[in-house]
Length: 392
Ligand code: FDA
Image (cartoon, rainbow, N blue to C red; front, top):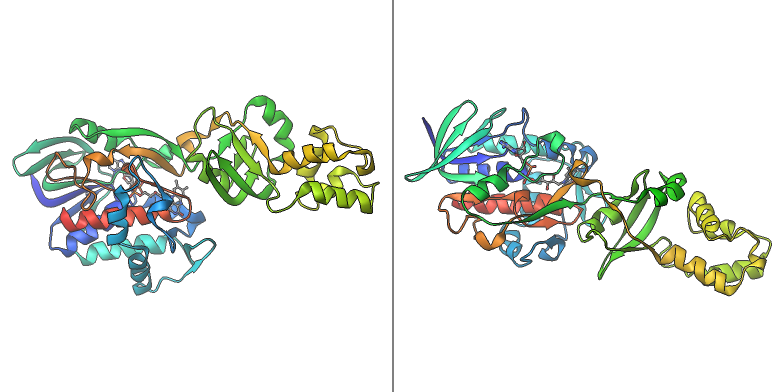
């Protein structure tokens, strides 16, 4: 049986970072992945340009049952550390918006950089290989792979979450946790489009493809970013963000012309030109189709002169205080990440080691630490991977 110091399961962002760091410490490292290529999620991320971190990343951008858990890792390996690595490789990048850093060229530059660092520090990579069985043995673990068996002192689970099963996502990490008695916080799709019931969809179908800058809130949490109507419901950054906080049965509130006092705008428009239709006045602040749908839905298709202040209040609340109860989400099929995962109570926040299982580590998305949209999830993968790499 082959023997290595560190076996990493999953050649994604977290697994590759961990392998590099363990390799730097002189550990013999093998990374396996059941996919035929490494870092597939990096490749498709950020529309092919990989939003690899966020300048403003801090613990408040992460969701977990224990919001303090991520503090140590995020401060030990910070966004500036990853940016420095990207710069050392001469990879050009830019800030798109809200501190989000993207490659100017292609996300494959990030994958190539990680592979090149792995090679430099002696970490081996074996693709199209799955772990089939893990046994605890003296001094570590014996892992049966589809193409042989490996013994290791440290076993690092970096197999990601359940999102996008078509790309090879599995519940593997949670099964390993169950095998070793490590607790798992219930998982659910996050950063995912929300869907409407059939009746609502019938009414809103014509809006599919229209986008607005919106403020979307659920309870006390709100996000101010673009929103897109889809043929299933709503999507766009503000919706993906709020989806991580939304639960079945919750209403979300949407302001589609934030910062504009629609009531006063309509009164002014009526005073200036009473023959104008409501939809025309609204279309100054909203896409035409949306303005038309709202006017029709409210039954306010007459001239502004024929509409009362009370009706303007109703229009104001439909535009800037639209409350709607999504029927569900698009699920793991399109979710960017998985909320929940390995319970952080059972992990050491400095090393990501399972407290009760010496030598076992969990890193990246499989852990119950989920970032907002905007480069935060990769930062968690780099930071948690780096930490495990110092210890495994
Ligand atoms: P990741 O999923 O990357 O890697 C896990 C690896 O384990 C995979 O290669 C998988 O094949 C392998 N694996 C799984 N089960 C296995 C098994 N049983 N045996 C062997 N191998 C196994 N984040 C961000 O910060 N910026 C962005 O721009 C984007 N964009 C984005 C777009 C889309 C479409 C998605 C789906 C996601 C994003 N994300 C993102 C989220 C980001 O991709 C995600 O958080 C990280 O890839 C998580 O890194 P991990 O290494 O933890 O898992």
